[in-house]
Image 1 (cartoon, rainbow, N blue to C red):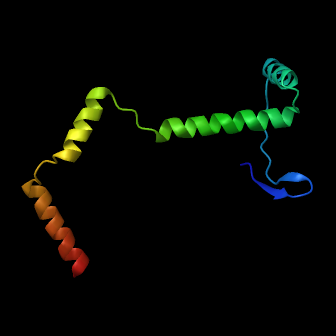
Image 2 (image 1 turned 90 degrees about the vertical axis):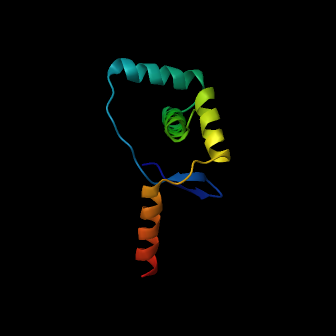
Image 3 (image 1 turned 135 degrees about the vertical axis):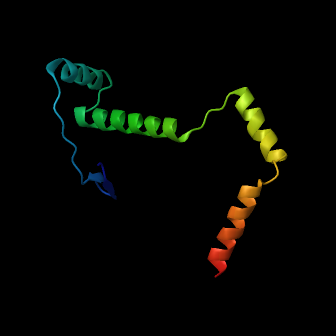
Length: 100
């Protein structure tokens, strides 16, 4: 895991280490990309991994609805169905347990 503190004089201080092995072709590809952006290899890798992690998390935390799904969701919020008998019993049981 990557963690850092900020030192006002020297910039970020990295405390954690992440190590992995690559085949020659992948390493050459990454080195070339870092060189094209005039960045140090480590800086390029940290930036690329951070962006990939953020994108992956966002994709998993974002709910995308179709137009039909959106309409059904909205309509249900605006006009919720009546509670079923089973739900009413479950809520009563929960209330009894919590207040007892």
